[in-house]
Amino acid sequence: MSPENPQKTKEMPKKGLPQNTIIKELEAKLQRDLTYSSGKILCSMCTNPHSFAKQIYQKYLEKNLGDPSLFPASAELEQETVAMLGSLLSNPQASGSIVSGGTEANIIALWAARNLAKKEQGEVIVPVSAHYSFDKASDLLNLKLVKVKLNSRFQMDVKAAEKAITSKTVAIVGVAGTTGLGVVDPIPELSEVASANNLYLHVDAAFGGFVLPFFKDLGYEPLDFDFSLPNVCSVTVDPHKMGLAPIPAGGILFRDASISEAISMKVPYLFGESKESTLLGTRSGASAVAVWALMKHL
Image 1 (cartoon, rainbow, N blue to C red):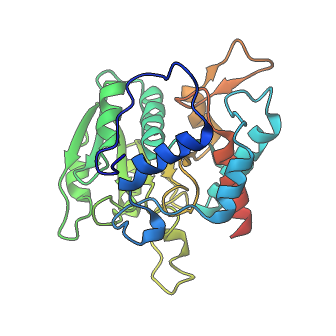
Image 2: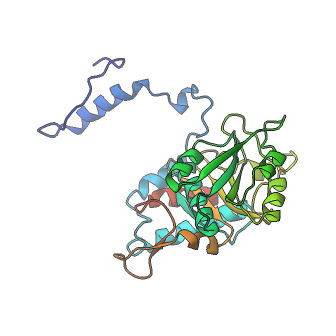
Image 3: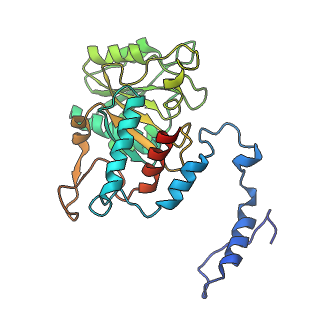
C-alpha cells in the first residue's frame, strides 16, 4: 500500500481484522500527517501535549462530564480546574466549563450575552481580526456581527467600536492574541466603553490566555486583558493551545455564576438537580482531568 495513495475504506469489513493489521494500515494512511516530533509543524496555535497530560488523559478516557451523577469526582475536578484558570485570569471565583475549544467557548459567551440582553435582532461588535467562530456564533444565534476596522497597530479601533454601538448592540468582543498576528486588542479601553454603554464584554483569549499572564514574570510589560478589568464578563481560554493540554480542551469562564445561569438548562433524565451551561451534553472528563493535573504540575 503506497503512503501517497493508500486504499480508501468505503464500508465496514464483513469480518473483523486483526489488530496488528489495522495498526499497519493506520500507520500507512497517517504517514502524510506532520508530527510535532519532526519539527516541521509551524504556525499552529496548538502545541504538542505535555507527556504527563497525555498519560493522565489516556488513563481517564471513560470519564463523562455530561453525567455528574455517575462521575461526581470528575465534575468536581472540572470546577477545580475552572477555579485554577480563573486564578490565572484574576478571578478565582469565576464560573465556567471545560469545553471542546475556542469555537464552542465563543459561541457560549455570545449565547449568554444575547440571553441577558433580551434584544430583538441583536448586534455584536467585533474587530475584523476576530476568529471565524464568531461568524458561526452569529449564524447560530441570529445575531448580526458588526466588524470594525483596526488601528495602525492592527488592534481593534476603539473609536470605531464606540461609533458602531446602537440600541441593538448586545456585546463587544475584544481579542487577546489574534489568530494571524497574536495582537492584543486594547481591552482596558473596551472595558470603559462597555461600562459607559452597559454592554457585555467578552474577551477571546483562546490564543493568548496561557501566555499573557506570564509577561511580568518574563520581564515584559504586562497587558491587562482579563477579569482584573471590572467590565469583562467572560473570557475564552484554550489549554490545548499554549497550555500543553491534549485536544480537546477549551475553557469558557464567566465573571460569576449569574451570567452562566442565562444559558443554564435542566437535564430531566439525570439524577439530582443536574444543569448544563454548555453546548455539548457528553463531554470528555479526561480533558478536564488532564488540564487539572497539568496545572498542578507545571
